[in-house]
Structure formats: C-alpha cells, structure tokens
Image 1 (cartoon, rainbow, N blue to C red):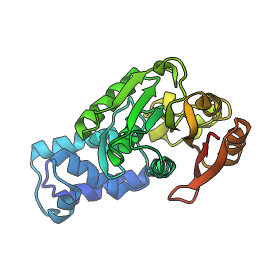
Image 2: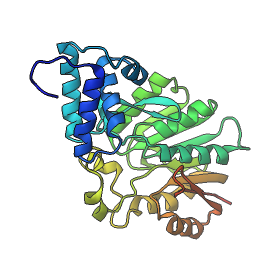
Image 3: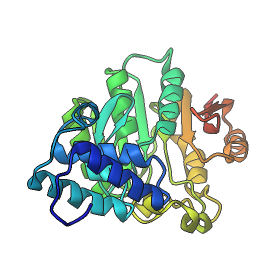
Image 4: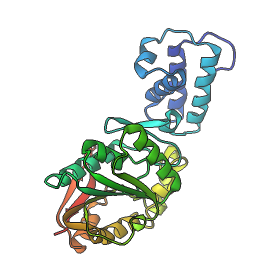
Length: 291
C-alpha cells in the first residue's frame, strides 16, 4: 500500500494487495488478501466483502500493512493469523509446527475406520504430532479414546498441549517430547492404533519446495532423509511391538510413495494393507493390521 496519505476503503486495500501478490506469483492471492485484512481488523472474511466500501482509519491501515509485509516475505497466512482450521476445528499454529493441511484429514478418516469394532476405551499413539491436530481430532471424534502423542520438538509439544486445552481434549490425552515411541517407555503390545504424519520429503527435494513452506515451516517436520522414507521405515518396523493383535498402523505419505510403503508393511508382517486417496485423488495414506 502506498505510504502517501489517501482514503483507502477495505475494497481498495484488498484489490491492491491482490494485485501485488499476483505479481509475486502467489497462488490464491485474493483469498490471502481478504484473510489478512480480516485478521488485522478482527472481523471475519464475510465482513471484509460486505463492508468493502468502509473507509479505514490510520491505525487499521497500519495493522494491515504490518501483516502484509510478512506475507510479502512469503510467510504463510496461517502463521499470520495464528491458526488453521482442520477437520472443522481451529488449531493454533506458529513456526514451531507444520501447518495442518486438508490432505491429512484423510489420515483421520482412515484411523476412525480402523478403530471400528474396537473397545470404547481403545488406546492410540500419535507420532510426530506437531500441532496435535491428529491426536486431538481423534479424541474429539471418539471421546473415550486414550491417546499418547509424541514429537521430537519440545516447541511442537507446547503448541499441541495448548491446542488440547483450548479445544477440550485433555482427559486421557498425554503429550511427550522425544523420538517416536521413546517417551512411552518399554514396548507394550496394548495399543489399538498407531498413527503418524511423519516427515516424508526427500532431503534433496527440500530446496524445490514452495518458499512459504521451505523457508518458514519447520524442517524437522519436512525432511524425511535421502529418499523421504527414513522415519517411515522406523515406524513400520517398530509399530508391531506396540500394537495388540488386530491393532492397526496408519501413515500419511507423499504422493508417489504408497507402493513402496505398502511393501514395507507387508514385509513387516502386516495384513489387510490398504491405500487411501486424499481429496486430490493422490494415494496419501497406507494402513494395515497386525495379524
């Protein structure tokens, strides 16, 4: 926005920001502009549209400008707003955690399907929990679950605990910092489900990611090693030590990894191995049961 004094309406500001972002090849530029204005003004996006002719005062313009400068630097809008909706609920996010994506809702659907027929008090482990979106959503969708969630990042665990308290998912939900199953103690085959959205981007592909992902989201949550499957292999190999007979493992993956991961499941002794597609038609989740 111009620094020169002039009358700016909400519509003017949205149009100017949209044009500027499009020149920077930002996808969804208009949506980003509307969300930034809504956040700065403390209103919802509908009001941004409905009140488009309203003049903005200097304080409002400055609040919008401060957020827009960050978006110009390609910081994700979810970090600017401080939250991202997942499975119909608002999860707080910042640079300590990966931003929840619609693709991961497929993991929730698969997990809930795999839990059908299990006791009401089924036990779940969520690895690489990040914002806690998977662990918390499973708990809220099936309140009688007992859920243990871990993440290597202390910062991520702090965000997850905050989300659990805010969304009312604290009873029988435990978060712990550490490496995969490590914080849970010695292996015990008492769990009905292990679920994870692990890092699965190959190290050599990190540099080719979109700048808002590559430069702002935590690399720890993205980098899956040389072929993207280093953490996935560990989870598939270790999970049978934690699952009771009939228990299931469900993992989110990158597009194109499902065939190789299905082979890993079968080699580890899982049966009833299935692939599930996300909203874009990509094979996103592989799951299987311990015989």
